[in-house]
Amino acid sequence: MYYHRISLSIFILVCLLLLIGPMLQHLKYLANSEIIEGEVIDHKTIITETAFYNSASHYSVISFNHNDKTIKFYGPQNRIYPMGKKMHIIIKSDNPSNFTLINFSGIYMTKLVPIFLALLIFWVAFFFSFRKRNKKPQ
Image (tube, rainbow, N blue to C red):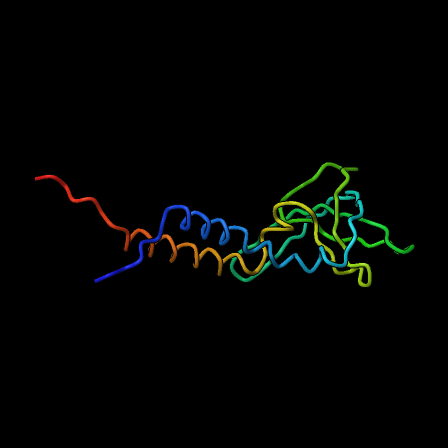
């Protein structure tokens, strides 16, 4: 029976494509967008109370100006940036409320991450289960 062997270079290439997959969602920002600079202006702590537990989340408040309009938003959860730190932000020119921070959590951590991680796990399992093994000498 003839079968096609997947080479190690093809395996690594597919793994790299699956690792950069979640960043592909932000290609729409790069097509018609501009990069502006925001600044950390405050720190906030938000306490979430439920019936079972209470938790405190810490946020940096980041502000940027676009078309004579000041937009403030919370940064990533539990990541405190120093006051006055300059942050780069990608915004859509026609809709400044549609923006993304240029950092790991802003670019990479999207809703697509679990899908691509599951695909990566299946790909690695498929590759190692069907690769040709060397026979041990007896």
